Image 1 (cartoon, rainbow, N blue to C red):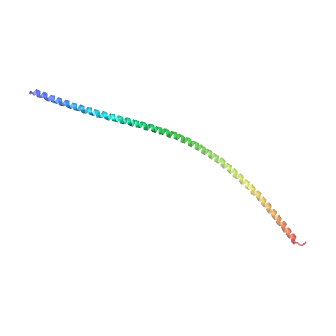
Image 2: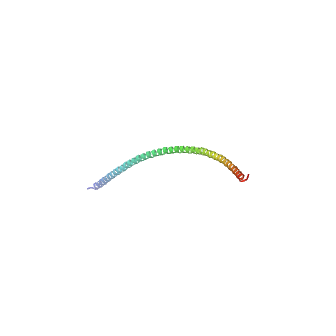
Image 3: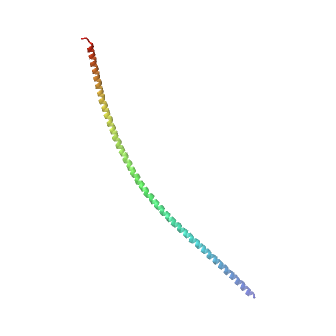
Length: 147
């Protein structure tokens, strides 16, 4: 074998080894590419599921928020009705109170008038009783005096 033939074999061997190494690196790169593509696909599927879940949750929250808005609006209206009713009740209470105060005052005046009437009646009865006692006294005196 000539020195150039050994050199060629060595170069050919190095070239073959370099080609095999490139094939291995290319295969490793393909495997890494496949692994990364799979991971990316899995991550995209996971992200898609998460987006769908978030979309559903967002829709549910929006629905709940709308229900709360409607409920809040109904409560505000109910409070307004209650407030109006309360104001009317206070107004009615004032009218009713004034009416009963007037009724009580009229009843008190009527009682005072009756009391005054009965006081006069009592005074009249007492005066007649005093007159009757005087008449009885005079009759007794008259009966006791000798004629």
